[in-house]
Length: 428
Image 1 (cartoon, rainbow, N blue to C red):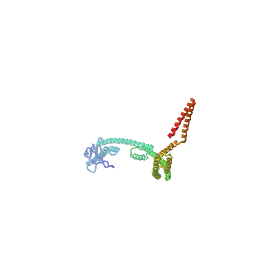
Image 2: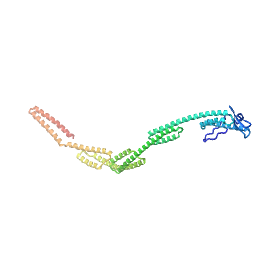
Image 3: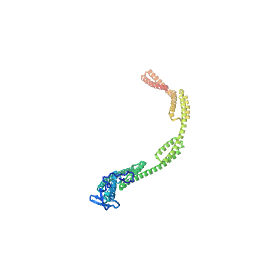
Image 4: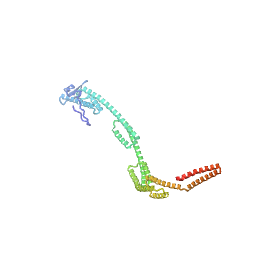
């Protein structure tokens, strides 16, 4: 049988399968008759029904013509069945078409198996109704899924609107949500509008919050720029300073204040940072050059002082007066030399102090040995011992034993003091 015409899509055209209803054109006389006047009858369960007349030729040709018209209905019916079986087209339209064909059979001007065709159309209508119901269920399921998905997207958008701080990522996500939102179909207008209001409100809230954030950020960056310009101006003024310590400390403070100032716009921040670093580097380069010259001078001074120290350590302290004079000359030259590196200060000063102590100790020992007061005390103690010994002998000779004993006891006491004084003089 002939195939149906092409559709607007590239889907294959369904082909009608052999029908369970017999073709009328094979044996038209089985389903109807034509009388001598050319009247065409079709047989029905209720008896014969006139379907037309034929005057254009032989009566049999008229009967065959009306049989072919039946076959056209049969072909249309089987095409509907094929489309329905293939799942193509709208089952609701198939149901309507089958019902129209069936309702027209009572008046159809055709000759054929009307009972069989009616049963076939009833069968197709039942199948179409099942397909309509299945399609309705599928649409309902799809609608539920679409509603659920848009609810998920709306909820995600609301979360982003209140919690997101990664602004670019969140903005990109809103765009992706919108693209997906537009691809979701099958939701009734009322529900779709309600969900859209949720999403739209969340997006607007996010945009306001993001706008407020960047407005605050712009204000902060403007403040940071102004503050950093002040720091740069001060840094540039310090470039020519020779007050090395305080200026270096101020640069450290400026760096801390720079970090605390926050970031300006990138291009402005980079330009200001370049100016700040240039000024800072210029100062520290000058300081490094000066310190390098000073270190070289201090190193030479240290070498000179080490030579003086070696000379001082050779001073002969057996002559304390000469040792003191030699030490004074070395000390004068020591002071004239000037400063040395910090690491050399302590060992050099300690070495010179050791020499100074050695010379001082020698002078003190000489002084103690020649101290006239000490010698006078020794002579006094010796004289007192002699006096008391003489008194003891005189008292003993006079027979005064008691006075003699007292005199000897006092002589013994002064002798102990004499011994101590003599020892002190010898140890100096």
